[in-house]
Length: 91
Image (cartoon, rainbow, N blue to C red; front, side, top):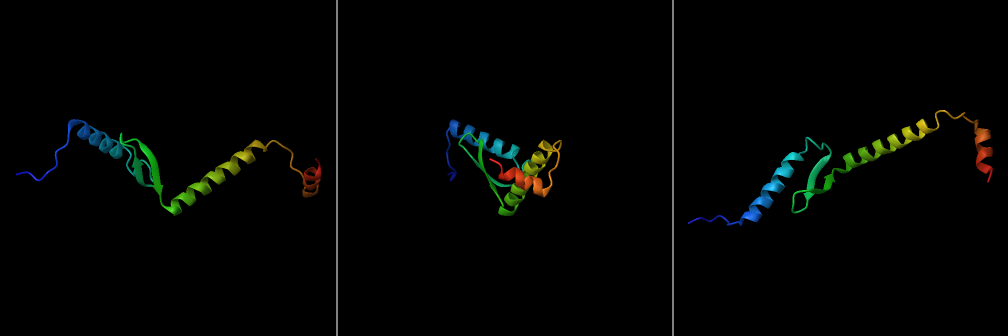
């Protein structure tokens, strides 16, 4: 007598799809991901990150934003502190 569960074909196919998806979305492909949350079709919907890794990602995004802002104004003539303050006072 078997103590295993019986699954219908649709369930087995769904489980296979989810497993295949999880295998292709391994931690090696997503180094900051600790866990994946998938929908019934195996598509990744959410990622769980360690708080330290999350903070590092935020810092990297902020650094990238600052770099882009600096690039946008790189051709502008710099102002002295006094001139910059005068500019800020004007409506």
